Image (cartoon, rainbow, N blue to C red; front, side):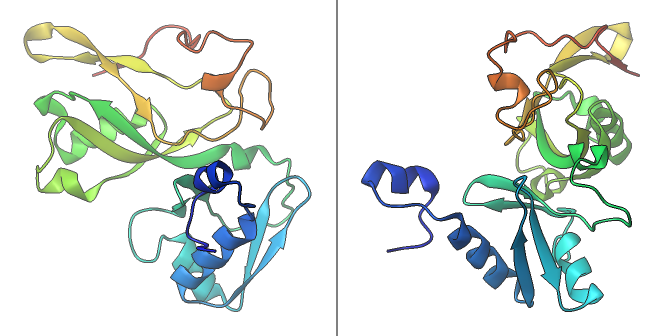
Length: 209
């Protein structure tokens, strides 16, 4: 069986999906030695032979991904466990996410502009590489450290030239399965049966200056 098949493909063909395949494939791609230790609450711990190897992986192997990986289309966020760590720690609810900003005005297509836009969602990390060569201008895409314990913004107000204002749409890629309303990992905010997925209650819409 081809272990590179994703979960949905395996389910359609009736084959048995084993998440260990994903972890084995990911470990091979890192090209460093590590041990996989599962946790009963659903977390996965990777134990590396050296701090250097660990930091290489957490830093995104030399790129700006900041430990944000994809395993067959699913998001995997890695971080170093602090002293006194608990798997109930609220710090785990801050994760790096790729976020799209469709039709972002050219006014904000600068390094400082990217930072302003990204900071409306969380802590701006970096834009994707395509932005720098302007080979795509239909949307901007940033890696942002987002606090998923709060309701996600789906839009905010931006200032345009000559004092005009507009609503900037926000799209999240692979939003984690944590619901800020239910405080549960079974689903995310957008898939919560108790909330209208088209309405975000975050108070007044923020504005970028």
